[in-house]
Image (cartoon, rainbow, N blue to C red; front, side, top):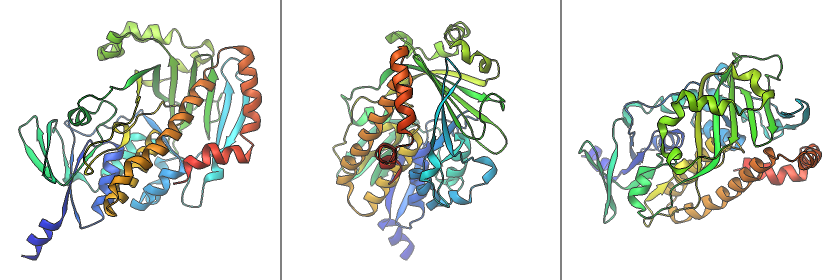
Length: 389
């Protein structure tokens, strides 16, 4: 009888989407006996893309440590100290930024493969994840939320957490007239490359060029390097919707032919090369009900020029968990919007500065960059406000 009563008192949490944000918040709820959690994933299995690296700044590592990330195997992650800025045109180093200034003993700026982080996050959640569950309808009756899936399965929950990405189907079901994500007028080129003698393989290398920048950084202790480039590129509306286009050999060749000559040395070395359009959020959407929430890219997707996508997904998930725990859910949206706006504005500034094409404006950018990366007051405002929870 006690166990039946306890089960009735437990809050049922439904999480749609088994990405970083969904899995992290599930780990937080799992630590408490007050919640019954189910994670619904539309795919047949959780996607583990080996060639995809991510950066985690200290604001997210601090939160991950609460679920044991500090014990995560050291050979599968890396702690760079610097971001080295280079000019693509001249290959000369412009300056460096010491990101280790924000580190503490157990909380350091970290790079790793996304697949390794996902494996870590889902370790204790296997029996809570239901794959092949594509949502088709979301209804709210009184305080309960009813979920209906394409396989005709139904479920009821007290809290619905939507974390199914920038093209969130769940979001479109509950917010009928939302503005869809917009094309950022950039393409991302990603993959992995072997150790190179021409770059510093112990830190993050950021190369700036006209309408183009790329980043190379280590993702483990074995010398594996992640490569990600962002290129300005116009796509018409039909091309943006044509997913097969980005697997077309002729299209890929056309894109790679536009890569700066100075970067061509890396092209032949890139493994698991993928090209995809970058979509970002244009506005914020608040659900009408305080027990339905968006997190991760479903809440807001940033331009990728501030390396905060994963970190903000983790931070936002933690804030939502805390608000549900403390019954302050009405404050979650406002607080998250404030931090998200700050990160989004910096991401836009970075992309603009990284892609300057006029030689004179590039000269002044490099001149000021050399001074700003050593200016403690500026860094505390520009980075410190983001890295500190």
